Length: 439
Figure 1: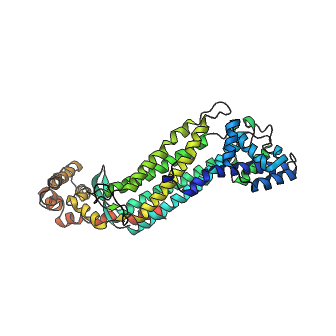
Figure 2: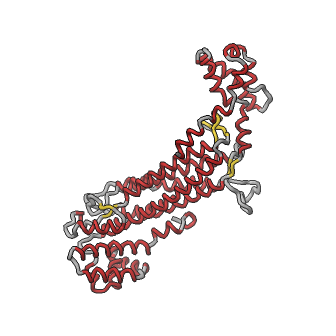
């Protein structure tokens, strides 16, 4: 993580101060349950809560202790004992370090998920607003980067809205899967700690007990979580790439907002570059890069090892912080996106009506012409228009060619041919698409 691509709301979740506060809450809730079970005195549990809540944990001091004892949880417990006093002997009863570490990670990932879901909600709201704004703004649809058939800018954005609806559902599912608690002691047998302690801690922290923790929470949960983040990142890149293509000089149907005083190039003052969506493409690559290490963390030795630990210290903060930043950057891009309907219409007309070729093909077949013959007739009238456009020379339009072709007019009347060039035909199901996406 670097500050350039981080929002404070997310980075705070991963700060040492937040981590140690969660560690304390796990220990204190466990003591609360132990007191209810009669394992430790009620007064001790109360004292632990009060003194721990009032404590201001010294991160530098904890780090100094860890340099000596070579154990992060022991370093924290040693520091915590300075605040609690003699009752600190009741802290961490029957627990192991993973109970604290894994449960804390679950809390952090759940909180991070909430921010990520909020980020997706911002993108969804922006996409819906702009899609409705340009619901019937005609534009050319492209396949393989080549003009295909007409669509609308609203339909384009509605498609991305549907994708981010799926992204939201994946994040909600990932949050539910990751939000588990393990307070089961060494090798996860509850030999030294009652399962009711785990149930109490889980309830207080908004988690669910892990069915079998084997001392750690199984890492397939984490793999699924980071894989979900990777898919969301890919959806961000997909929309960012579309905007980048639309901003190309030869296309220029949309572009990122360019603020007053903004500079596009240190050398060329005329430049207006898609820097935000290019940045989003790079950020998406980073988030996806964390998926493979998460998958490799699933296979651990026996009941536990810590080969996953160093990986998660990187990918937990970095993946969530980066994706959070990217979602809000994307939301801003969509909210301010400059869209040019006149340029879209100009590009639609660029091929002299060739975008209606399929309608002509289908009309000929419905008029009794064999499909192969119909395809040949349409193509022989289309290719001269294509070549003229690429050579920059004046030539008859596709419609004019068809009207001059006796084989075509033998099957279709001129008025029937002209009707096939109605742009409205391609927009007649937009309401249906919008109803499917927006309900």
